[in-house]
Image (cartoon, rainbow over all chains, first blue to last red; front, side, top):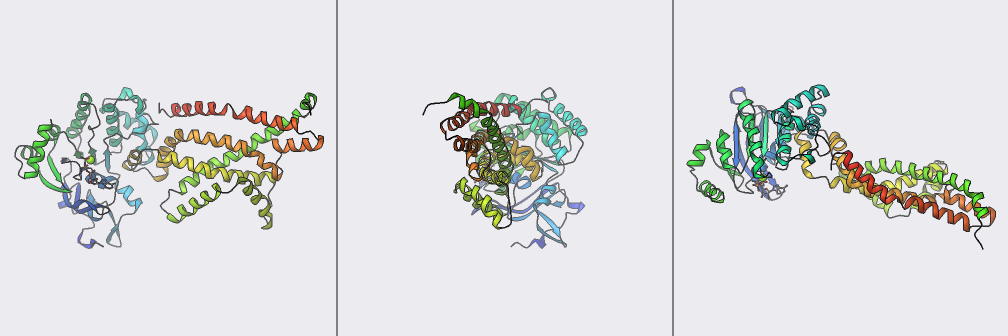
Length: 270
Length: 221
Ligand SMILES: Nc1ncnc2c1ncn2[C@@H]1O[C@H](COP(=O)(O)OP(=O)(O)OP(=O)(O)O)[C@@H](O)[C@H]1O
Ligand SMILES: [Mg+2]
């Protein structure tokens, strides 16, 4: 068992990123997918995660939302997410604690994962009503505002099966935003889309970056888009951050050989 | 022995009343099975492995022993432990329990057919476990379960004659009684067969229509 006493119970105001991965290790059986990862993300920062297939990009996001880790601690907004305090010490988080601690984190998926038996509006209202305990009236107002924001207010009463991929993904973004997350995770949200509708989703994401004080972690294969909107780009390789930096530095002047290889391979594929 | 129409019409009212009882028995037993089956299916998905194990073995046990044995068991063994049940109550318990085991398997298949992304979406919204099941997963598990549920509705209907062994006054019981009184079995048994046929035959079509209706109602087509 790992000695958890080395980790603070809470992060101090003076050193409080929105998200902190501290010595995070994730294994699936014998396979180590994330290897002693350390990563801080500041409030309002937009971080893109790039890297070859299987390098652990999705896993990084999933640790904040869906899965447990085998080593280290993750903090969100200064509070431990993967662990909870018990008699002045950190212990593994219970399911109940996890569910609550993850409330400030929202996620959008490659395949949208909208609820097919609900309309666009009902999809957006589900979390606010059932989880946040908001009145239906307020949840509806908030959801309609968000559907307006993503340009789909005229589709609010449609079920997902009646929407295009781009429209479904925009509803999914609205659904995540309806929970008023502090951190938004985007996992290849344009990868399943036809090329001609990618733009409508990236436009929405651009709007979020400029208008809201959202912290965003985005896994993407669209290098041009990552370069355009990120504050920082992390290149993952083999479950570690091989190289990170401002987009101009990383894309134009990569220092590590693996980064150079990856970027030139991506460029030649385009 | 020739078919006697006069006798046929004479016994028809009694047979129709018994048909009503058959339908009530099937309906009640099915209602029990539908609800209990869901609990059996959900219990097998709890993180409590002991409960999962017990329920799984129970379902396996019910499915591998004959219904008629279960009916006798509930009706005749119960009183020896001071649990006196009327034929109707014992019959409904036995047949409801029996079919709940089958329906739990249908539900299990339906739940497993819901894509894993739906579970992940629920987690990403921090939905509680019960909201996840009852608001998101089960509604989507329903359409793929309708066909199986319909088959077992027909199945329970065709199994109701077994309740005659403990004296539930359904169709088979009435036919036996009439036959015994008049020493004529041709007409009552034929009527039983025709009534079962008339009700069972259209059911496959009705189930298909219902399945489409459920999908449309849920906005999934
Ligand atoms: N549930 C799981 N069980 C076992 N291994 C897993 C599981 N999920 C992911 N992995 C493994 O973890 C490694 C990292 O996976 P991850 O999905 O994070 O990669 P990725 O960088 O997102 O790749 P891609 O670009 O293909 O999406 C891979 O080797 C993958 O096979
Ligand atoms: Mg991935």
